[in-house]
Length: 428
Image (cartoon, rainbow, N blue to C red; front, side, top):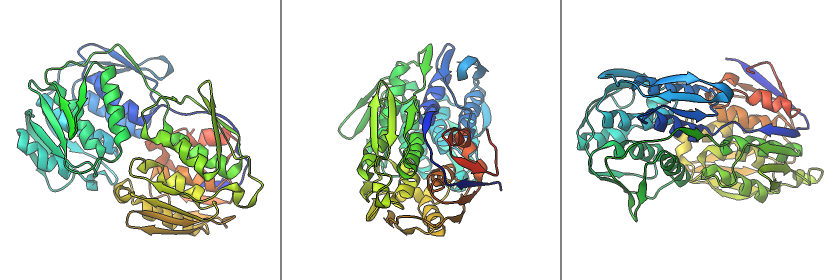
């Protein structure tokens, strides 16, 4: 596996944040369900995007690349039976399963990496109650036959919001009305809000209720063009770099009114002590206390229930912040591309940090400096990118560097553009 070595550097300048992977997944799938061609963009051609485009083509759609990262999605004839390769994308898998069921397409879903082991039991339990036959040994391959029937879909809210999003895409396609009822409190609500916003952009209405959502049947997806906003979860890596290196870093392409839950990164890094300001749509991150002990950063309490993807970047900043940082309600990170809690504990310990993984999160006691060293990237894009911020202050070699292609293929390029050093690999 390829390695990258980050070396100490003063990172500053301007970077355009790539389009939101979360919004793009949703927009591409919505476009595929339109009756007429729809243009979606910009799209960053990461491995996860390619997985969703595989799904678009598997349901009969065609994809044509246009200028400036825009894709034209045109409808086609849906096959009777198909195999769908979801790569390593949990979003692709969980969004597509109920959609194919609603369309009545017999499908076998396969995947790679850790995806075949990630939770899918919600659909194993739920779909047979609504007319769909499921065949699985507990993971992938996952085979469905039959056509989804409307009704009440009772879903836990604390496993993955992706199951709920998948149903919200599928149920408007059915003839009759349906409801989705939460059986446990909802986590990652921002992702559901984003789903509902994207669906509204395609003319599909979802009504929130006290216990979940009401979905009218017989709806039609309609749109001519959908613009994908910048990705707040990727912005978090540069906020961490600004906190540890000083900055200033100007972040372009982000929406102030975004419903992405990870927009909370602005508030959290401000709590650490980072200055983050916004003017005319440009966010400027600067640590004005970089010359003080602990870089002027101090530990905070973080409830990660709604923002699990930000935990790796938050953990790196916390390793340099004075006092204790407690990250809680992050149990789902045990089930991501790797066990991210154990991965961040091991990686930061190897660099000299005082960090302990607990069942639902991390406890970190910051140090003024880390010694550096080698860390396992665990084939996890967020682990590899998060450690770039640590590399602004000490030399860090990370394995599995190519894993960034999953979500942000241009990360090393953008890190270097800001003055960062990333030796040993060139992914653009």
